[in-house]
Image (cartoon, rainbow, N blue to C red; front, top):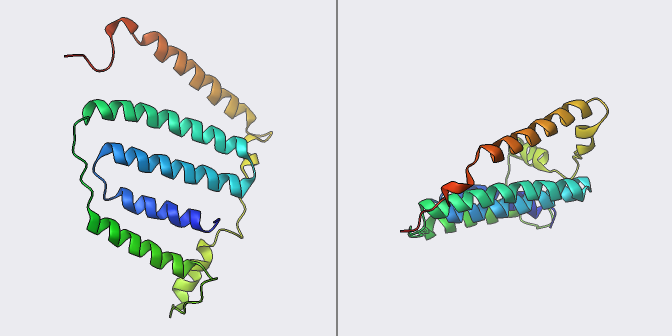
Length: 169
């Protein structure tokens, strides 16, 4: 399961190249966000950072979803099945190449083997605690205050008596 998450993230990135509808693109971004947050939780054992990241991403996606439903509310969803099947086949081949438990012998050259070894993220450990250590807490505090000030400013600038985003015909 742990090795499958980076491959699923890669697959969703490839699928996102073939999608032209903004609503389906939003769904792929939400799925990508869920995968990134769960992978971050597995790697760092810090669920609070993954939770905050998920909330920030979903808040942004909610705003994008509101704008995109206004712009492209009646657009037809065209899914190109051939490109989707092609990317799925590439994903399956990459999964078999990447997973060492499956005993399929590939004739790989040394460069590709070294690339696959560097992609192996099980041996790499990331440390997010360095983001909030003693040396950087001041800049983080200033950044949080600045973002809070910008939130208050944008709320004061907004005129609530103008009406909703979409006018009723």
